[in-house]
Image 1 (cartoon, rainbow, N blue to C red):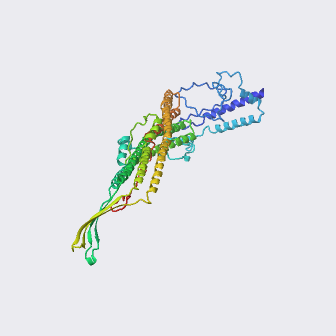
Image 2: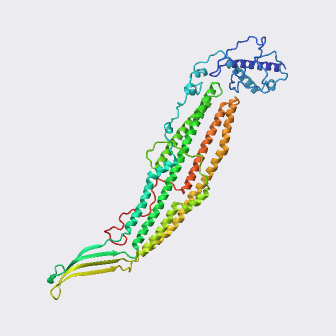
Image 3: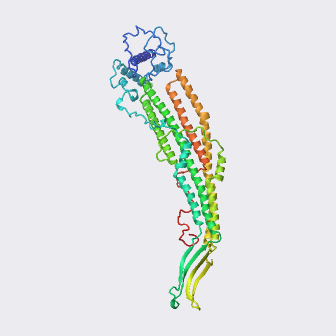
Amino acid sequence: MKKTILVIGLALSAAGCSLTAQQSMPDMPGMPKPKAPQQQTKPAAKPVKPKAAPTQEAQPKPQKANPQKQQTMPGMDINMPMPGMPNKNVASPETMPEDLKSMGRDRGNKKAQEAAASVEDATRQQAGQKNKIPGEASDQGSIKVPIQELQEPEALELRTGTDMPAPELLGDVVKREPMTLEQFLALADKANPTLAQAQRNVDRSAQQARQVSLPPDPIVGYNGDHIRGGQYHGGEQGAFFMQEFVLGHKLALRRDVYRAEGQSNQYALEVQRARVHNDVARAFFDTLAAQQSVVIHDRLLKVALDADTNTHELSRIGQEDAAAILTAEITAEQARVEFLKAQRMFIAHFAQLATFAGQHSLELHPLTGALVEPPQFDPEEYVKRGVDESPLVKRAQADEVLREVRLKDARRERMPNLNVTAGEWYSGEEVNSGKKAGWESFVQAGVQLPLWNHNQGNIEASKILLDRAHHDVQRTKLWTHNQTEPLAQEYETARFTAERYRTEMLPRARRVYELQVIKYQQMALEYPPVLAAQRLLFTLQLGYTEALNQEWRAAIALQNYALMNGLDEPVSTGSDSTTINLPTAQGPNQ
């Protein structure tokens, strides 16, 4: 029993010394330094009266406890006076805490002895710091450092980074007049070179049809025979006229071939227009979404900087350490990077939009459009409509008609043409009466006999090409369905996602933020949870913007039959030859 009482006395004395030493340690930067307590030579003779509890405004914020030095003993009542500070006005508890009983029982235990020795070493170490004043390199020296430069108060020389602000690349852009989708579509119709190229293909076919339908020019010439006359001193001299007559309406059929090519090129023009409008509209909403992303990333950057400042402030009063400061600064730097990336993305998308509209050096403008109002329709109807009405399918069908006309023309080309020559000459030959024969007329006509060449090879080749064109129509329909069906699914997915953001996630996030702000204003919540709720709201707004953009992109692609790449060279039917049916050429297929 005496040994147990002795152990209890030693433990209470050690705890009292530890508390006295902790009260003598300097506070964190920014807090007033407490006065050193007066030493009591006989604490048992002069008991300390309990002080009134400080008010909520005057009470200093508690420091983080050291788990090895300030742990509360198990079984101890928090309202019970601490050991080492005797108070005669408060009766001692009747029961002994269980940890003290175990210390008495385990006095011979090795682990218990090591624990007691550790407490005594800590007590001596803290008691030795009682009257020391912090130097310039200690925590108190960090008060002279600006708050945003404070990272590790105990090691200012280990400062990392420069805390540079994020570049503002779009400061002058917001002052300019906003542009709309209709303006860019009008610019594209006027200035996109591929549309002019496709129109020139149509014009070329029309002129080729005009040229190929022209009949052969007649031949006018001089003809002479027996000019020297021989012993008769005669001969014939005169002029002739020769004309080739194209039979079997072959000129009209040739003209129909190039007119069919022109019809195919007309559909190719519609294909190119759909590609350009698709690219312009999709690029417009890409840029509009990027513009909204810049605004949201700017808000996220402000939240990150606010959290960074708040972490530095908390470090002043000892509620955050250097690791938390560095983490907050890293988050702020990431927000700066994302903000810069969002600005660069807007510039890149705007440049693409301008090039699709045929503009080389259009300066940056803000955009205005109904990003939050994407078109609502049944995508499966557009899939079916794309297979039936796509200009690409119609062009394939026009090519099929062209092959039919070419086959008809090949069959008619085996009919020969009629060549007629007529003329008149003067004959110097003397007749029986001694007079000269005088003026004589002549004429000749002929056709080419199709004995071996019936144009049979070209006819068979035209049949093959017609069959290939028929398969190309089926291929084009399958390709259109192959491209539009995934777009329909993308549209449905994006519409569902945007709807969930709009009706489910964003309202909840706004309510969370409102509740956190209310609790913070009522001093029932710290500031970091408010920032976290704000960050969540802005992050969800980014997701909502992306979902709206995806919905717009899929809808625009469906409306334009999944035709893209508006700066690619437009497709063309026919030849670019400028030597068709030359006036000086001979033959039916010049």
